[in-house]
Figure: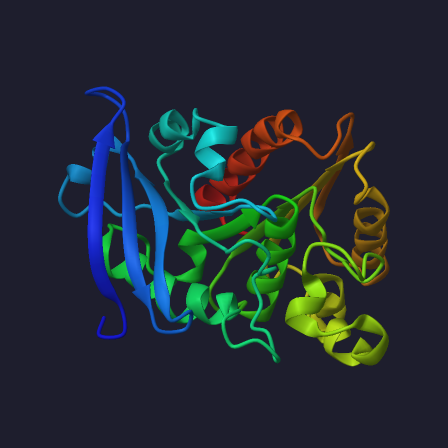
Amino acid sequence: MKRLLFIGLLTFSISSHAAKVDTISIQSQALKKITKCIVITPTTASKEGQNFPVVYLLHGYSGNYSSWLSISPKLIQQADALGMIIVCPDGGYGSWYFDSPIDSSIRYESYMIKELLPYIDGNYPTIKNRTGRAITGLSMGGHGGLFLSIKHIEQFGAAGSMSGGVDFRPFPNNWDIKKALGEYANNATIWDSNVAINLIDNLENKKIALIVDCGVDDFFITVNRNLHKKFMDLKIDHDYIERPGAHNKAYWENSVDYQLLFFKKYFSQGI
């Protein structure tokens, strides 16, 4: 792919039977910088002609590409056990995974869709269509999972959110959002068009497999309940889960297990 320059590759294995973990560096034209990404590939990927579904795992605010392996090291074994490639991109300190209309350095939607997805498909044994591709994440990444999948539904067959900031408008002064979208009071229309909960208004039922979960002690529980209600009002099929937990590592380490199983079922059976 001409627009992406492969800068470096670090490969390491946990054991002779573990999945392969690559740390790749990509020169992004959208972001105008080199950005890193972790790719976990099943051991059996060495067999010629075998292709795998891909799950993109997005980190939260102030995280980076390595956050998910820190939260859940067993992702390496899960890639093997579930037969899927797991990709952990770097979404920047506070990008929320959209393209900012006021800051040209925040173009993570373009990076993800136009650069990273084609790069992964071009360099790894993936199933190269939406039926073999899912996306989810935690907190800011939960917003990104729903935002990117619904806005680019031709790219993803399944999506999820864990403790997601699926509607950040109740928090206008938090997490650098106004850096990307301007002050909410003066830019409400811009905020409205870049928040995940608003993208479902025209979503066709069964077009995408959806899973959303949030801990009952999470500060995002209200916006997730609002999202669930909107899905119900619009008669859009989805899995929605509330369980004990807060906005923390312990919750996400547990949550990702359920979401990966959901995606495994989708990849095996389709919608």
